[in-house]
Length: 97
Length: 97
Image (tube, rainbow over the protein chains, first blue to last red):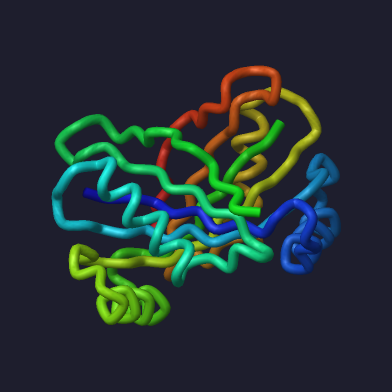
């Protein structure tokens, strides 16, 4: 079972890396870019098991290690099984603040 | 129009950050974690326009600035319009190698 954890800065937190990319894209000739924000995606392969239990465990991992809830939001998504079509299942956004 | 660009290390490239997280999760009591890989997600807000043209521009940005095609893969996804349901449209994976 594969999950993706998205860890992004809260909207209220300044993102200098995103601003730098935005400026570089403008310089390179992409004026259509209005905003850039950079986050992390953590791809986690888990032993097979029940998905709702896995979600609870993954959210615990986010709170304990993967995200800094003071400045970051996190979101857990599951990938479809390798045998199936490659879809992601959009899931609840968590904003612990 | 909002797009997400995923930049991840190629499978053949060692990911020390992922290995460190994997080790930490095992120490914290999550033995179900089999593998961890860390990548970047770049959220880009674009002026509204035609989606296929935007995709071509975004893939060009990846090749020119956002990704290092020697060691990284990239993938572009679009988010649904803010008025609609919050879905992502899974799109073609690009492996320029």
